[in-house]
Image (cartoon, rainbow, N blue to C red; front, side, top):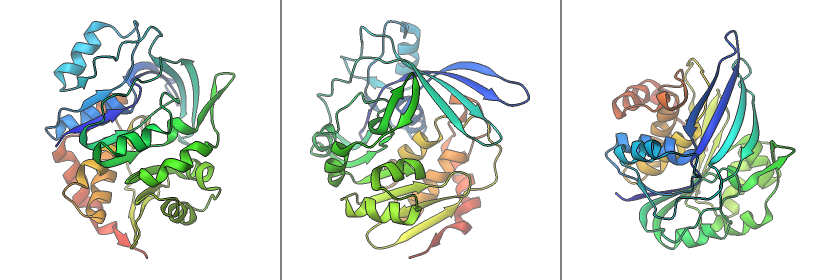
Length: 298
């Protein structure tokens, strides 16, 4: 299986509001979390991204050793996209600030069985969704980067009318309730899922934080409860959910893929940053535990 990942690699400066008031910096971004997970499945992902002169050669070598096939035009004059992220570990609320933004992605290669479009800060134009879909068999979209704006450095979400015109090319999408509200105008998760389908998306995943995740298809709606797990920083969990869902849909049905994807996201949620990327064995062990909560509700 050939998988292509499209989105900025980032530096995440993370501060946790808890008893320890911990702060640390980690390489991140959807391509890194998704790619490291896919490497656990024996896949060497093709990665269309940009990073700057502050992303030293040792990090590029580390990506290569982990199976990443980086496109030739990844180097940028501007520094790597960097976010400062403040997390309240009790409420799980997250505040993000944009520190630097890398050059926009030059996407001239889309071939792949599966393509994951996972922008973080408008590094792609929405019209790239159509271009990607014409060159791959299954297109997964995490729309967060099409919705983010920076107001005095603080990241907020804003409607993107152009995005709506291209959702008809999307095979699967993942949103939380706030992203779903911005796209569909509703803050009811059921209406969000069904409106995404009416906009042309074929499979819509709506996450409800620590309670449950729902999958909407043209035929039915599935839900799976999130198991009680210790939360560390939550960074990258959504990226891994998306990557594992897109991967598993090539061989599993909707219900199995939902359970597999949620298991990938939460198996090591108690770990810091990149340490939370699980093995396939860990995913399958978690899946065995949560499969009983899988329900068909419509």
